[in-house]
Image (cartoon, rainbow, N blue to C red; front, side, top):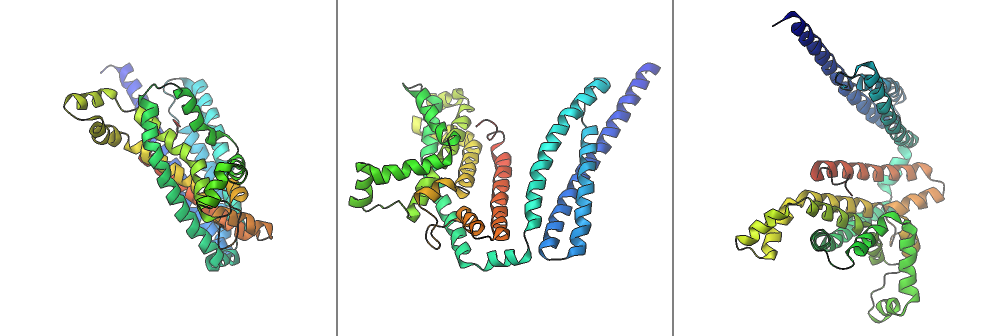
Length: 344
């Protein structure tokens, strides 16, 4: 090996070692920040002031150090200082946005006190609201998936007349204000002959009734499941379905044996997103079913009720539960559905 080549290899090896060290430092500092934040919040709730103060300081120190080490660890290849500064500059925007979101949640968490947590744990109304939130969101998600799987497959595979219109209508509940869904349902069931027939003659009351919660959740959340299912079926190679058909499978068996298993990740991701959306719905419920304690109150409307009477600490404690549910749902979608969330 010539001397110049050896020098280049040594430089590349040194750069690689330095980057590995920075990556490890960044992950370590990130872990320290997360642990400090969690322990600090728990210590604050438990009213251990000294412990809470120590971990709060650790948290504020570790995050800027994480940002610095993560920025320096970005691999820019051989683009020199210009490329490094550009990469670090763009990363700082990521860090600023993430920091803003994280510290908003942390501020909420540090506002909650021990009395609020005990009140949440002891309240029978909040326990009922949590139970109702879980039951109704599971039912609405199941109904959403009954529609999402065949609709996603049809929109992905069949170029029928009006497909573009149908595809657009599927996305409407995602983009329009949630209050519109509640207002539309209320007008339909109270001001139209069909709605009154369903309510009065069939005896299927939805307005200001628990079953109306399921209907609101379905209207708002089904689009996430349908869109995710369509995206998942779009990624299934149609040649595999054709091979199954040439081997004697019917369309139904080809769907069950080939298409659905290959699209499983995206379909499951859509179900998780739909459930999380249904679990946290608020606006349509306030208009269509109200928030009657012990009857139509769910966790999201509990936050409004507690805040409206001045129990801000209790409202924030409940809000943190919803934030945790959303975070776990998104992480699960990333793990199960891969890029399904990005492609919605």
